[in-house]
Length: 205
Length: 208
Image (cartoon, rainbow over all chains, first blue to last red; front, side):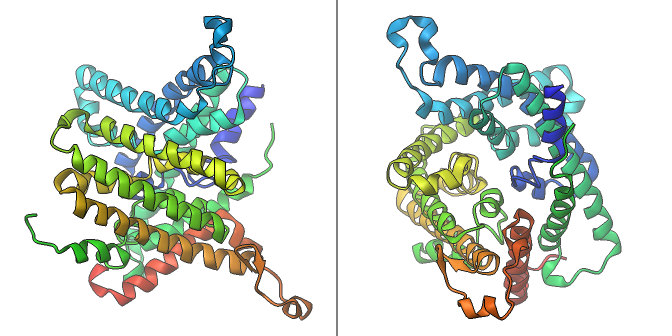
């Protein structure tokens, strides 16, 4: 129940895009049409689900103050938390490389449609952001971290698909002032969606 | 350098014509999240200038020895090491600000400005132009950050750098702070307004 609550909250209330503005760069760059936007969304969701539990275990059994106590008493006061950034990004970058190779080998058609976006995911701040929030909030166990990861991923997927759909309509039906065309109007659309998403604030299951 | 851009242009172009935020659309995430107040915006801007300049130089120095298929990991490791240094410095000398910035200092690593400039410039140029490019783009980013932070703090809280600037008699006459400006979505609107002004001024940047 606790985890389900966290999952729902991560999708709507703590939405990666509208509450924290993470992953905005690819969000703005790849939301021109719904199909590619959806593909990138699925890839980001997958990476969040995979990297969050790995980074959780890394944080709690290697990096945190006193986390190395399972190696013996002499390691009890070792604090490696200043290394966490570099470890997290290494996990994310190597997982991206791994996923890229696996997808290329087993599903060439999916690879062809996602190809360009896979390496981009390593530098998507939504993924590193997920790990850093996990570290900050101190989740109870790896399963909770996975639930939060899934929620954040699906929230991101939802946001990018919605904005892509709106942009498709705006591009073909409306007469936007010339200086605002393209990126400018997209910013305003995001802001309006962000305000809409704020109505979810305070939701509890 | 192939296209003979002078060092001066490398340094000054990112201020306006080639601004990383409003023209190249890089580094939006942090630009929106840290600008509710002017002070964190300023600290964030300075941190990004420092990290960007030094990572550009380092990558430019080792650009000929990096194998192309693992270059992203190499770049990330260099940037991450620099960000850790900045993070520890802030924790030591500006603890309150670093608490406000929370995870966003860590997220400088995945700030697209860094990867974008490393890929586009430092991988193909000598250290000195790369250093200028890093400083220039960092300042371009910081300018936008400070403008957004200025308007959001002035209209949202009536203060600048924590000091009250809107006189007390305004409040007594019925002036109320616009609480909406502190909320995250308004950062997007302010940036959209900057883009609007900037592109009506530079007509050649307008999209079809």
